[in-house]
Image 1 (spheres, one colour):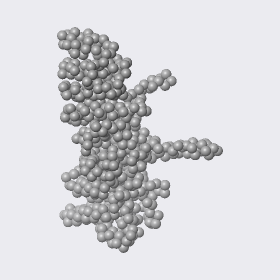
Image 2 (tube, helix red, strand yellow; image 1 turned 90 degrees about the vertical axis):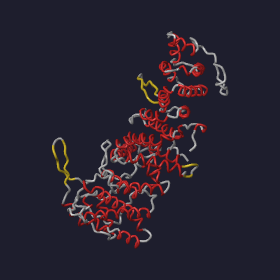
Image 3 (cartoon, helix red, strand yellow; image 1 turned 60 degrees about the horizontal axis):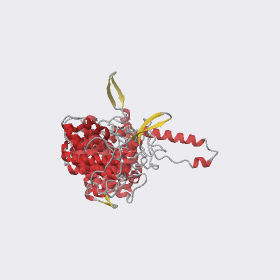
Image 4 (cartoon, helix red, strand yellow; image 1 turned 135 degrees about the vertical axis):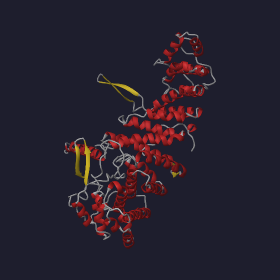
Amino acid sequence: MDIDGGRDFLLTPPMKTVRFGGTVAETLAKYKQGDLSEYELLKHQLADPEIKDAQIINWLQEFRSCVTQLNKDHEQLIYTVLRLPWVGRSQAVVDEYIAFLSNLVSAQTFYLCSCLKMVVSHFIPKRVTICEEGVDISDSDDEDENLPRHFDQCHQALQLISRYVTSTSRFLMPILQENFPFVQKSSRVLECYVHNLLRVTMYIPSIRRDVLEIIISKMLKLDVSASRSDIEEAEESTVHKQQEEEGLFDMDEDVSGDQPSRTGMTHPMAERLDSLMVVLLAYIRDVCHDNGSLHIDRTKELYKDLLSVFDKVILPTHASCHVQYMLFYLCSFRLALAEAFLDHLWKILLNPSQAAVLRQAAAGYLGSFLARAKFIPVLTVRACLDLLISWIHSYIDSQDSSDKQTFCDISLHGPFYSACQAVFYTLIFRHRAMLDGNMKKGLEYLQSLNLERVVMCQLNPLKVCLPTVTNMFAAITRKYQVVFCYNVIERNNRLVLPVVRRSAGGDTVSANTNPLDSFFPFDPYLLKRSGVLIEPLYQVWEDLADTEFVASKSGQQASRDDEDDFLCGVTPNTEGIMGMTPGSYDSSLRSPSSVGSPPVSFQKIF
């Protein structure tokens, strides 16, 4: 029968439908007396794949009328009800089902976790079986145009449950983590699930930090599985293949001119990560802005949550390439955020109680952020350099005053070398900005840093820093006659730093050009779709054509004409593992709300 959408289903009696057996109340009474026939019949009818909307509404209303009797003895019956296909049904079915869930968890909290698991299971597109050439292929129904409406219904149910049961968040978090799809799943599956997790934080804000930690931890697995060299190789291979294919149609210029440009990533892991970065960056933008204006309080709270996740999972992860850009993007909203992030990194570097590997990682982030963030003004860069260089000189003083002989030892002085490299790296990228406008004052400032003492000290930082950084720093400081580094570099080249590596086959001694195992967290961003938001904020490498570069005797090349970054090729690969560091909506950028947000009446105001 037709269902009138405006009918008040809560006040009307059950509709007559074709069914077998008695009412739910009668069936439960007979079950209590030991008669299971109608009980099993009820379960069978509820499990009917052809069940009609009117039947579902009828039964749900009866279940609600006797919800206090649905104790643990009826667990299998309730599980059958929870498997009813309610999502995507008529609005009357959805409303009745959500009302049933609310009554059930209120009267029988034992079923809370089961209800939460059922709702969360709908956070990804349902699996459908497609027959292709006689073969059944199971895949996600990615193209379902009703997906936003389905997600709305799930969030409506989850929000009402959280209102009735205040402890929902405590039981929800493990379920959200357990149901997170494998990172090998399709980009669409991962994107939908992350969308929905972030939407949950809009009406259950108490779990936002934990949700962000889950999401970012999964994204890091994708990030370290797609090394920079692997992504670049995959993209280059695709470009070459496209050029070869286009060459076959040289005689037909119109054909090659009409070929669409590729917007996705060739590397499968990079493609998945790109999709999730689009979602995360859009979420950050939407949370922090209200009608185009920055909402200060919300931005501060989100910054605190992301910084906590950064300390816990991002900072200890070696050589991640892209996930850390979430903070890079957030800090671009306001200078105070960037300065707070720099101050946070600075405190980690200074803290002797922190593990040396984390202090070195903090120095790497500090130098890379100062060098690459276009939105950081020169005054802030100079202030940070002043702090770094002051600490470096104090460290040298402490070593000079010590009774022990000072020598180059990474295990003892790792944070010091990382701080020196951060200074060198920052000056490489920012020296032009410091000298523009007033060359005389700029040179006076560089002279005031007393870099010669740093370069000439017994700790010998030029011996430990990356050769590419060392050589470029030497070229720049030589040009402006700030310090002459080549004598030290040549001496170091004659004394190659040996590294003992232990393996099953015994100890081997080899030369290591990256003894700090350094990496620069904000090296060029390679993901295409999410990169649209990063590109305007990013300081690219500008080739120093007017700088006389003296190549080291090891034959290393200073820069490549066809590369953006002079450090290309020296950042270590991750080998697909995670470890500790030793040292206005665009069509391609959609916020979680674009997949269907809960109605306004179900959204919690900040």
